[in-house]
Length: 262
Image 1 (cartoon, rainbow, N blue to C red):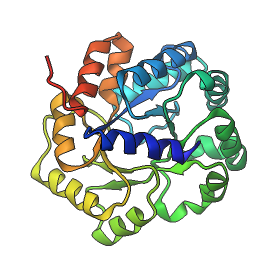
Image 2 (image 1 turned 180 degrees about the vertical axis):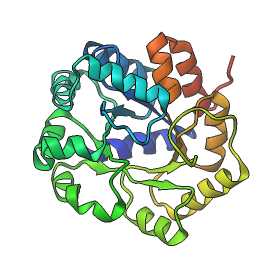
Image 3 (image 1 turned 135 degrees about the horizontal axis):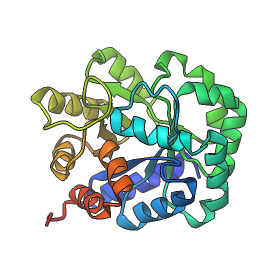
Image 4 (image 1 turned 135 degrees about the vertical axis):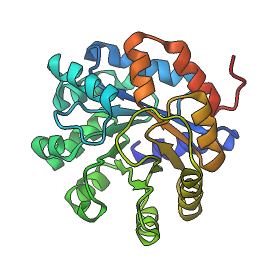
């Protein structure tokens, strides 16, 4: 299914008048045996897709909560290969789109061609590689296209407009708008600069635009939805899964759907 499964899921959500909600989870945090349970939970709760983080020893874009989750997974012996093998095992039972978030080193170590082929077998629909510059995408673009994996690009508050236009013109799946200058983690509120940035990206993009980094409350989710098509929530979701606070995750998802929060 690949990028088509992402496109259809996001389109269905937007056509219903809802905002897109994509949770980030760390694969293998708490053990890979929990992966199916977590994916099925988000599928049932109404998430549009799941961003599945690959644990890595040098996670330059991640804040402390996600770094700790990655270390727990690494300490448990979780690898990119074991994650892909688990996805191959459970994919028939899980229908939600899956987008891997990995750094470039694990993909290189795995082998780009082999990675793309195994992602196809595992039903991976997209991939985010935050430390790969737009100019270097040729490293993966050929094998990804063959395996129908959407390469989800990121844009930032510091991206010049010409660069925003260039990246938006190549966007697949959705455009990931990074709403803070720094790593992932919690923050208090959106500022005017962030709102203008999201509106600008939205005006340039033909695919949905989702806000991410630093979004941790139902209010943040609703605020993001005023400027773009939805939100990606990472650190808060990872923390809630670690403490088994499924109610708070449900409140985040309901905020995207425009439901009244208790």
